[in-house]
Length: 420
Image (cartoon, rainbow, N blue to C red; front, side, top):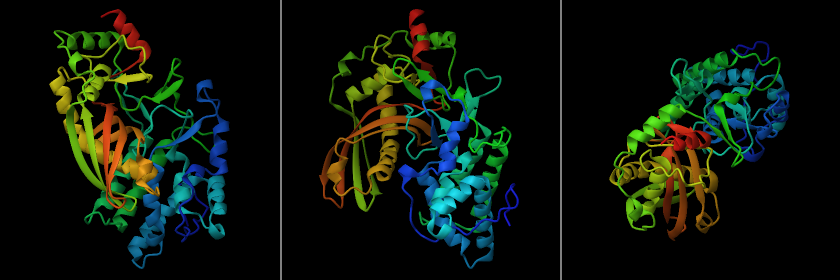
């Protein structure tokens, strides 16, 4: 019998087939139709479902479910079966049956079941401006009594703990992974905690949990929706003080605006598909200049009407071009490693590496050595061999995407500019 909070529905064994369903058609009908259960803002259109733990990360868990379920080790088997039974119960009757019907012989595919857990998704707008790629994409909320600051909500906090535990286990034993009974017990505990938190909100019989509108910003100029995430949002008056303090005796950086001279470089290597890829990531002085005028309090250009995003975030401690260059050099290796993981996710199985040329990655929520970062990288040249390509790329921009720097909406920046 199920060990979940929902009694009476024994979990069928997971499918033993190794098929990974089409990620573009991941949602079963009851989950997708669940969007219609809520009145959504007009700018969200018909709404979309956003995974907190990415489908790729959930798939890495799913790949281990069936082997553990069938293990000859009774402790491992029991722990894995308890985790799977909880997943099955939390899916709910309609979603669970739809997942089973989509599987071979009526056996639920582990990938599809984990992808379709209602608490794994957040109902929000179509095509938001931020793309987290494989990175964790949490729901957040204001911190009571701490104006402008934000935190993970209780569901996302538990799911982040689940993801962290999984990634540590997958990286153990030299990257071969240690998927023992203790791991499945830990995953069970975190998933149950997420469920307990989620159920504090009454769904009133709906499949999906209610949308959290407060965490989204809509920009009428660009028609974009953007998650607030973990970014702190000072008031306009606090923002005015921050900008004023940072803009005393500002040095000129105009000489770097069009300079193609390399300011920082990093070389990283990783397996992408079946290829051993070397990535050389470069930031020219003009790229660092762009970061300065878009994402620092000292050099931000209030007169630039072409700002493409509804929110700008800022590196608060960068006061000189040298400091911006040092920050760039420190972040480049981690951004390069993250970019290769994202390349593997999106284009790892291309027939020819030439298909990577001019590819652009705009990724949010990237954990770069403990900092959450947004980055924009473009692949500019492909050399080497097909089996061991050498890829040249340029970082066009990067910005804080978490608590490392404040954020301001377009409207707030206009108000701040009027009082500087």
